Length: 484
Ligand SMILES: Cc1cc2nc3c(=O)[nH]c(=O)nc-3n(C[C@H](O)[C@H](O)[C@H](O)COP(=O)(O)OP(=O)(O)OC[C@H]3O[C@@H](n4cnc5c(N)ncnc54)[C@H](O)[C@@H]3O)c2cc1C
Image (tube, rainbow, N blue to C red; front, side, top):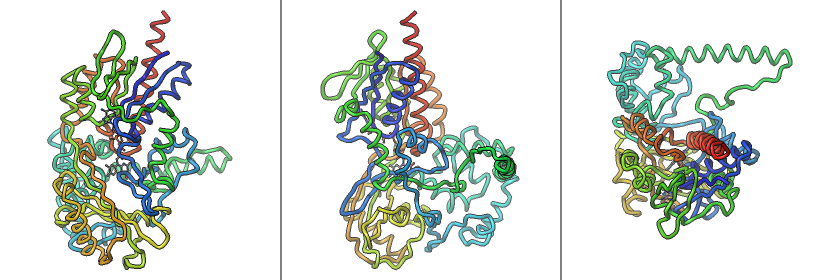
């Protein structure tokens, strides 16, 4: 029997373990899987706390259905019927600009007449088809957006989005690593995003026509995408997104070992030995490291100091999530939407606020409202570490000034993430190439997780599934060699 150890039981490690098991069974290979998790619970950054009738997300509040990976995982787990889509009104998103909340338009015409950007800013955006080519192969998000859309669009539209997704700094993050789709669009449009978007729209129209024709002929057709539009629909579960990691963890049963931190890894003959921080060790033929990069660096330093150094060079931001529960009747604001983001230049404490109980059913008790604010991030890390009282006061002040909420929250929870989200800075892709080159000398060792190619749940699931495929290929080949 081949043994596989997975280190880390966040969504990445749990998914990797699930698919190693599935693919090994399908390939007729016997694999004994052990998952080592340092914490007393599985789930990592995914945690849904049930408190005073509220369902509060300490981290992620769901995944978008515009990529297939998490939906497929739910199918494979047999839990698709439990999925909970966010309400239609959650498509409405707001920005706090020049002291007022403004709704983000969803169409080009709506955008033209909105007051989010000045006419000068809009005119600059209209020059997008004449974008100059990039000076560097790996450029910052800020440089990319300035070239294509101008300074105002960068500050008011894109920078808040970067803080919404990565809690990141657009002046340091790599465009091609953080938003590979944008880099791809630039190529498709011969340097222009607008040209690429038009091409894609034309293709989608043609595809729609073809599908309609096939349907008319009585053929069964698979329609790509969903009614969600390009952004997708935020999706979770009535119990919170942790239902997904809990289901994965329960499928592992006693193969998941909690409170077992991996400390170092040693190569012994054809196998690897994972030494635990407290006591003991586990030997294995293949190893999936799905712990955060800083932790992977520590455990791999005994195997390859250069890989460890590269991993340790991936920085993480600090972030605090502050949840307030209110009597709904005490808030005048209609709370119809997803929530809002705040550009850095507005000088507020919060990066944004999510109207969780408007997005999803089951998030707050009857007659109550749940709001969650993000504080800190790469451009204001110190704010994530404010004392509890100061943090809560600053959040209340921001909600009063931005949304006109004077009421006292009846429920307050604070979740601190000292190393919340990895930052893909310029040079990230080159760093990954160097890591991968060195891992070729460590056959049977695989890295997966949010530190590499995407931080969203969909990206983590996708990368973990791909890692699982490679693990099963590796153990199948290794078994073949033994049989020879
Ligand atoms: C505040 C916040 C909001 C977010 N919102 C969204 C969202 O709305 N949508 C979305 O798609 N994504 C969101 N994300 C991102 C997403 O949740 C994460 O990228 C993803 O959950 C990371 O999963 P992971 O398994 O790669 O890492 P982690 O969740 O960090 O898991 C790593 C695991 O490894 C364990 N570990 C560490 N060291 C060791 C060791 N030495 N031995 C054994 N185990 C170890 C840890 O305890 C942990 O359980 C959000 C993230 C944060 C922080």
